[in-house]
Image (cartoon, helix red, strand yellow):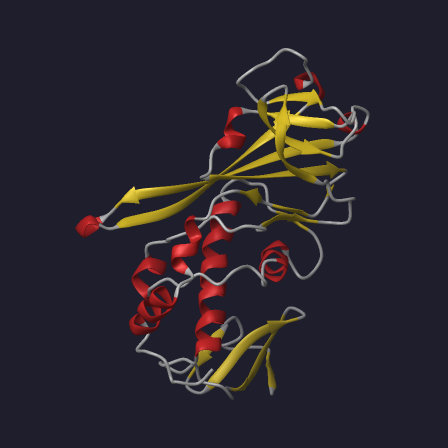
Length: 255
């Protein structure tokens, strides 16, 4: 291992000629590459590659909203990848990854921070679809609240195939949304237990996922998506795994 302090290699990162270059404490470190990524993978290696590739796509989609609230670790990106490392493995071919195929996954983290997490679940208020929370009317006046809407779209693609794409939007939840007047728009209502609920027809849509994040002085609560969407499941099958493996030159036969 050596520290590169000058010359054309001092700003290089990655692999080159059997050497690996990486940054540590603002210094460029050079070492011999010990592991060369094989063309063919074991099932475990394929699952890891697929999870990382798909989470990278989700990160780029989330980053486009300008709401990447992930505290701790080196930076927001690495924290996002860390807290989503246990997400379900979805198997995409090399071509699907290059076309940014993305899937709405249950329990996807949309934020990570030290504030108390908000608990929420699907339900109804006065017969209307709702997201029932453990927030009180006083809570909603403390700090900010961001409402994440994650939509699973399925777009017609080439050769009669379909291209799944995730879209993420972020809306503000404010105290002036608190109302007792029924509405088809996102509103705040008080449920039977005295806590607040978000009421909206969208909570009945099986292709949507939702997350509610509390923000105070730049700090956030750790929140995950709640969804009824099961579209991702068709990409968790053995058939999907074998198709993905074939696009990467097959499996080694090892676990």
